[in-house]
Length: 255
Ligand code: SF4
Image 1 (cartoon, rainbow, N blue to C red):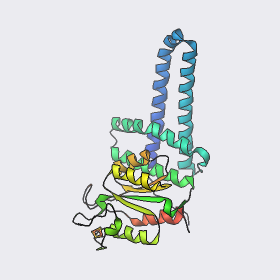
Image 2 (image 1 turned 180 degrees about the vertical axis):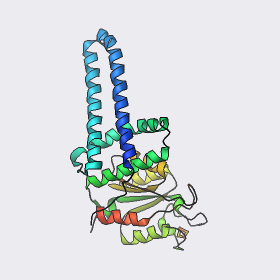
Image 3 (image 1 turned 60 degrees about the vertical axis):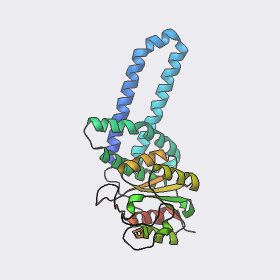
Image 4 (image 1 turned 90 degrees about the vertical axis):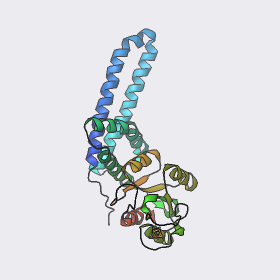
């Protein structure tokens, strides 16, 4: 059975990306047009080099975006364009956030849409991984607020009382040799990545942490899962572990 990801809502990020690209190209063309006489006065070679560099840069970003659209809507495989697409997303991301702010689109909606695009992109990559090469990063807020056991350094310290989803991840770690880390923030998450050197990261987090993390961990493929926040942010959050299991079933090579 095919692995189905929830990619509803990815259009927002893609539409903003098209707008951002058009805006960047317009601004760059305008600046070059204004500066061109001055640049030619200084040096014709310098002027030509700057124009060629600018055209090449935007051509690369545009090709990356076109392939991303084809991947997301046409369900085409990525082929050898993984880095190109990621590079384009990294260039465009902050401009998307800026345009979103100008259009009064909530930041969280754009970040969530980006996570959907990221996951569609990961699926299209059709890469498969060994279980030991997968790192699952979980936010500390998944742990029950009243629990006194220190699961941050070691998920095995969970005594399996069943009050939070950590127990299910502990159970998963017994059945599948993936690396699982509960992290209180970005610093420890980065440390875990350095230590385990994963080929793939499954990250559970809130909108902002997830979007930032997926961008930051490039070029490592990352699968993003938004946590549920029935009690508001950062406290007694939850996640459907079925999403993690389905990903592992589909993308992890059976030993
Ligand atoms: S399931 Fe584990 S981590 Fe969660 S509250 Fe119980 S002992 Fe603590």
